[in-house]
Each structure stands twice: as structure tokens, then as C-alpha cells.
Length: 382
Image 1: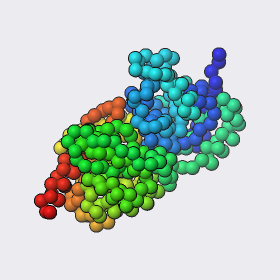
Image 2: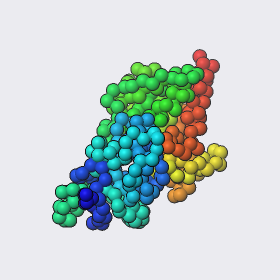
Image 3: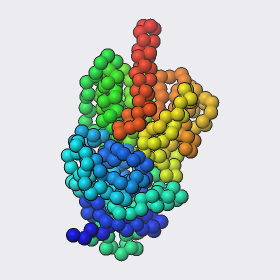
Image 4: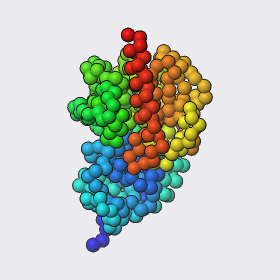
């Protein structure tokens, strides 16, 4: 049986012909690359990839199959999937089915058999751009029509995608170990590993929809608030920034990761901007300025906070001095923020890092210690 033809088309007219992988049809999105050599199931189910066609730089994908234990959320979120050499067989005792079967069952249009590293080099030179995968009958459309379809699709800048991935209603995960109180997580695209890490630190975890108001948060009577990772442009999330400012005004301890870091920056009064091709993968070096330690970390972000890397600055929105706590060593991008007068900090990457590495897992302990110290301070003043 001959393979089904497929083609990846980028908005600059670049074309990469291959064969269908997963579902057959058409899909549109921002074409980005991920540099991890493992953990593809966690990548596929990371809600932060909503709206994106993901190109895997590692050439051989699918050899461990897919199981029902490792998903990071309730479904696959990528718009499309691009691989070079899909595994012909599944070679792992935990596998329940093949990656190809999982993609097809979830309606994820993919393409295989193309030079993914050539695409990566192109994206590094030109920046992430809109694109589409056409397979089956769609692959036979005229080239000019395919390009017209790509150019008519929305750009990532200006998109608020959190509503697509957030929980429809609140959920609760019981605390484990020493009880620290309730934690309100605003679900901008939270991963299950984050919820489990928080529960392991003694939080009763309340995951709330992205649209939650400060009154909804206060109704939980939380000991602290957490803003999760998620997709889209932070400049398009004014409502979530206003709610976060109410959290900070109320003096509640706060921790944010990834998209939550960007919204924390905006709440402080800082700006954000789009990176040329972003950081995606599980091998990104970051400097923790407080300890001087270099961590290998998991990233998935195309936007960043605009702030000076050295010294403390006064928050334009009146929250006192703020400093950059972590810096990406590949390109000197802000990877963390710390407020000096209020109990609040954030990082741009993923400390839960399902599939690894686990260098940054200590940040959950740092957050728990901050919440514990804040509670003790309140008691001493009472």
C-alpha cells in the first residue's frame, strides 16, 4: 500500500513534501520546533501547544508508543505534528497503542518523512510563522490555493487561547502530607504534573477556570494563588491581569509559571514581546541568579517579559522593587521574576517537567516555604 501524500506549507511559500502521519486532512497553526529527544506524549498533551504545529527536531519519534498514564491533560492540544522518521513498531512494555493510532484517533493531522532539521534551521533564520499541513485530497490542491489558505489564517500575536484549554468547571485534588491550606490555580492550560506536585506539598488544589473572578478565588479561601502555563499572547489577557492585580493587592502569596510568569510581569507593569522562534524542549539552560546554579529546564514559550536583567527596579504598578531571578543562557531572555516587598515570584519555564529534567522541581518547595512563612507572619501579627 503506497503512502498517502502530504505537504507542509509555510507562509513564506516554503514547501516540504512527505507522507501523512496520523489523521488525514488539513490543519493550520503557528509552526514551531521542539528540541526534546524524549517525552513526546507529554508534549502533545501540553495545553500550551494549542494553536501550534509542532516540528520535532529529534529524528526518530514514536518508538515508546502511547499509554494512558502519562498524558498531561485531558486530550492532545497540538494543531499538527511533524516528524522525520516515525517508528514502525512500538517497543515499550507500558505502551497501550502506537503514536500514529493516537494521533488519528484524536484527529491530529501530521506529516512524516521530511527533513525536520532543515525546517528548524529555516525557522531559526526567519522566525516561527503560520503554516498548514495538507494530506490526502488536500495535498492535491493547487500550490497557490494552499498558500492562500495559510496566509488567511490568524497570527499568534493577539490571540487569547486560554478559553480553549481551561477546565469548564472547578476541580479539587486532596492534599497529601502536611496540610498547607487551599491553593487556587487559575487554569490557563495547567498540566496534571503541576497539580500533583502541589498536592504533594500539602496543598488542597482547587483548579479554577480561566474566567474566574477575584470573588471566585476568594470563595475558595486560599492560602495562595497560582497562575499556570498556557497558550496565546499575554498582551491579549487583560482580564486575567486585572484579577492577578487584585490577588497581589490582597496580599496573597503568588507563584506563576510560563504564561503565568508573563501575566505576573504585566500585573507588575512590565511589557511582553514575541520571541523570534521561542523556547520549546526539555534541554534549555537557565541561571538561577540567587544560587548561581545552572539548571537544565523544560520550556514551551513564544513570548517573554521585557525587564532589565541586572538590579532591582520599581514596579510601575506600585508593588515595590522587582528583580529578574532567572535568565536563559542561550539568548539572555528573562526566565523568572521575584518581587522583593510582596510574597510573589514566577518562572518562565516548567518546574514540573514531566518527562524531565527535574532540576527546577525545588521551586515547588520554595513556594511552599514562602506560603508557610507568610502564614507564620500573619499569625505573629494577629
